[in-house]
Length: 310
Length: 297
Image (cartoon, rainbow over all chains, first blue to last red; front, side, top):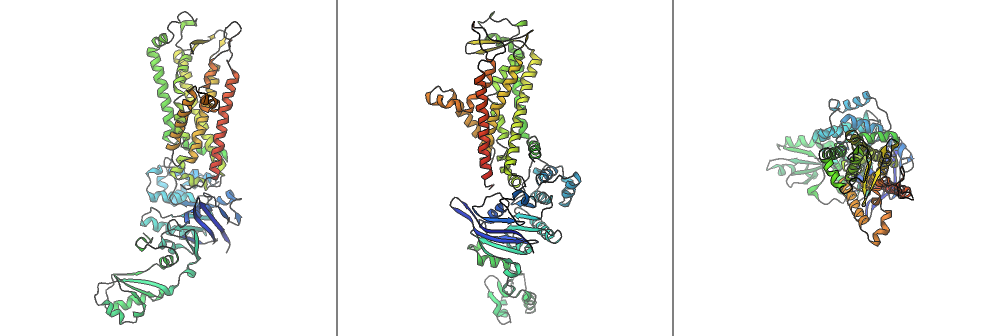
């Protein structure tokens, strides 16, 4: 597979603050590359450097095998982006916004092309409405239409689910999967929503305090033998039943709820045995393995505000 | 690409409601002055030129003519117009930073220099249209309503008469030149607020700062103190009313005004050069900063 993005020794300092420090990573063609880190870890700064919004203090960025610094326009003509929230001219219509950004992307779209693009994101009937009347979800869909109008090879999404409702988040997730599978696009997506990244990323990087903590494919990063399962029940004798069962060695905690450490493929068996033992299951939750990995590897120390999904 | 960008910028400028505030404000002020002149003009003119009865010989005896009304309007309005210019030009970059669209704009395959240059051209074009609008209303409408005749200009206890007679019109060309120089002055204001706009995240800051700078510099210009006198020639605000230089004539050895002359061509050229110099300086600073700016909004 071709290397599409190659970042080496990237550093950015703002006065005394080092936001990104000696960061290196590679994004391969066809990847959905998850960019993970807590707030302030340096995700957005890195992504803004990829998009030339921020000038690196040192290091190099190569995209499509070209130095970004010297081939800015050629590279950017093949990138579509949404940065945190859709940026739109609120006093203009959806059609006008799309047309303006299409032209700025270097294409001369026909009316049919623009309407087709709006149709794809479900906004054709609101083409002439000013975007100030749009909901956050509609703005995000228009932002996607803008990002994809020039058929870019690389799509960069910085916190794309910010401000979206659950349906919007699900739509975004499906879009990312569709972009990779159906359209063979490469996507870089940053988020603090671990669950979202876990569901779409083929490879990912976790950064902390501007430095890379770990990078790899999902298979490389997660050990299925370390899957945590949370179980809620009202049975007062549940603990006694469990400690006398074959699952007693897998039990990690019995405070508030039972937590088992099992192999991912043992989860159905665990559920079946609990029912067979007469334990009523109110809730069985396979804990996000990415969350465990994230907490283990980063300097996050405040479980009360762990940034999980939703 | 700059042409495409310029078209886009102009489209955005003229789709913003705030753009039309300036045009409406100018129309209201000009029409109010014209209405007042139509109603009470003769009395007002009589008071203004009292004690000078019989000193001037104006054909048809019409001092209150279109040229006079236009001069009065420009005197009143060109002090306030900088605010109207800054209203739009101070929003050119800062407004986009505030909306977030600047981020998307800068990630497009266009150089930052071209983006800024197109925005600056759009600012200058807006200023030009504003001045044309003012010229049409203040000069052409006044000429149509009040007619044309000799122009009397009261200048430091001296009244200068510019003739409009069978041998020609010595006023109209002066207005064309005056509007040209006023355009340079307003463009300097536009360039200042545009430059400030590059450093700001919302448009209020550049607009207020532009007006503050103009007020402070104008105060410095009017204070006759040695320190300020040395600075004054280099302040663009000292040339905001340089257009009046076209309404002053040379006199011959016998003390008679030389028709078709300008009192000091050098002063007018110097004013234009300093204003253009400020425009170039302000844009250069804006460009230097914008090219190096980290877009964090």
